[in-house]
Amino acid sequence: MELAERARAALKRCGVDLPAAVLSGGRTVLARTPVTGEELFPVPAADAAAVTDAIGKAHEAFLTWRTVPAPVRGALVKRFGELLTEHKADLADLVGVEVGKIRSEALGEIQEMVDICDYAVGLSRQLQGRTMPSERPGHRLMETWHPIGVVAVISAFNFPAAVWSWNTALALVCGNSVVWKASELTPLTSHACSALLARAAAECGAPENLNVLVVGDAEAAAPLLDDRRVPVVSATGSERMGGEVAPRVAARFGRLILELGGNNAAIVTPSADLDLAVRGIVFAAAGTAGQRCTTMRRVIVHESRAEELVSRIAAVYARLPVGDPFAEGTLVGPLISASAFTSMQDALSAAAADGGTVVTGGERVDVVGDGYYVRPALVRMPAQTALVQRETFAPILYVLTYNTFEEAVALHNGVPQGLSSSIFTTDQREAEQFLAADGSDCGIVNVNIGTSGAEIGGAFGGEKNTGGGRESGSDAWRGYMRRATNTVNYSRELPLAQGVNFG
Ligand code: UN1
Image 1 (cartoon, rainbow, N blue to C red):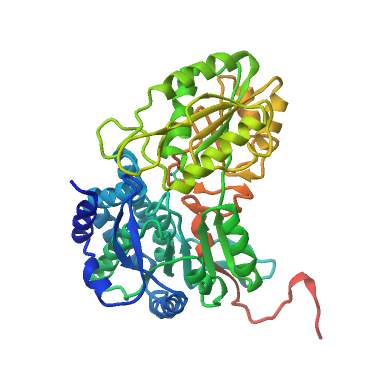
Image 2 (tube, helix red, strand yellow; image 1 turned 135 degrees about the vertical axis):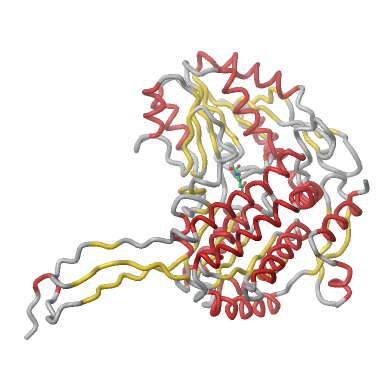
């Protein structure tokens, strides 16, 4: 089926009537597909004034929503999760068309949304505060978690639906509303997700505008950074984007949840099970055409295993099915754009200039139309040069070698980013050392698993230039609430803390 037709049909089933919306006038953005490089059709977009208006609407919704009991809020997210399940194939169609993800990865992204909804529903009965012993007689010391306000969610093209849902499912059960600034590269997916959530809200009798979608550029998003009615800004994207967003939000003391660049690595030690390592590395490095923030970009392998590992990865890379993401059997779809392809080629030239050797891949593959398909590249590097320390959002895997374990960890941590990491070893000491305080400095540290494909149950995010935010599972919900510490005096005295005597 033609892609524009496929997208329109999926949108319609999700309850989005685009032509009507577009005819009503106003700004639009042109939806495109990296599968063929073609332009699809115009979609409503927002300018800065529309974003300010969206903040007002979401703020109003928050004022009602914050007093709805959390388990009742959970019922909305439960219904939303059901609608996502019902429309899983439709949303996967849109992710396939707009991002070029292969079918199982597109479906996997929607599954992550269903999973986080389940998680958030359970959480809606568990937003627990602690009770601490007071040092004073007849006093109770405790903490209460309250809704905080409008949460701005700024999402990237590569996970156009799941990352928004991690934030939104939590924000909603926490009693907040959301203004979603979606990537201009993925307007269709964001309209479809928003329509399903609006439908769930209507069915549950929840207020309108709990999630207000704005598709727009950086300029349009500016009010989200500066408006004090937006106490939390959760942004996913490049380090450059984070560098622009963070100081502005910080200037008004807003709270930031940043999920920026990754430069994720695997250490492969002498005792590694190479069957496992090769599978884990290839999925993490070549999956999603290298366009995950958790994509593996570096392998740090012990000298004694380097030849074997490199030749085994190269053999798999040479037969990886690169092509139409909708075709059965394809494992590597297109890059998002021509500029992504240019960045990849620039990085490969820089690697050669740094003394690196391309073992395999890197070339453009002619698939269909004007899509930018590439064979994932495997590059041996003599050192961790400036290039290797940078995130290039494309499937390039740099291979470095090490001699001592300390050297491996130093190389591993010797980059500005700190998102995800892994070690392939069957030596328990090495595994534990990697997990220890002086081991990996990342937010995600795995053993005998690649760097990508995290489950929603854990907190997701990383340190250093990755931005320090945590989304999704564990206690990430606390980032979406305000904590009040309460001291209650039920005695007839007024003893002061710390034994202070005041008259
Ligand atoms: C991202 O690339 O922004 O761990 C998110 C993973 C996915 C999420 C990636 N669960 O690879």
